[in-house]
Length: 119
Image (cartoon, rainbow, N blue to C red; front, side, top):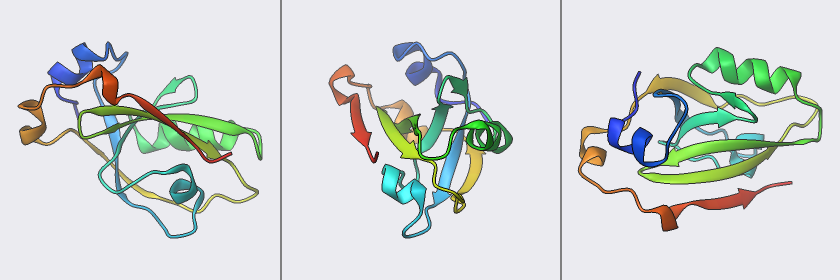
């Protein structure tokens, strides 16, 4: 599903859709990376994350123990998280989505970009 057009343009995103994180399993690599319920994953490594399958492809092709940058929209904040792939991934439940309509009224702020690293 599409992201809010204002956010896509503001951050000059390469795609207009993402994957909604609907739950994060406690103790999982997703939690260690800082993913939270409601985040929208828009990039995994150098690849767009417009479907759960696209993210799964990147994860299975990544090197065990190597950092994997995830670009996430948290509200209207663009956040870069770093996930580390262990020997076996625990699943975060994901669902394609868009930002909520109330997010459209908020103006994105470039100072809200930040990095979080788990590796």
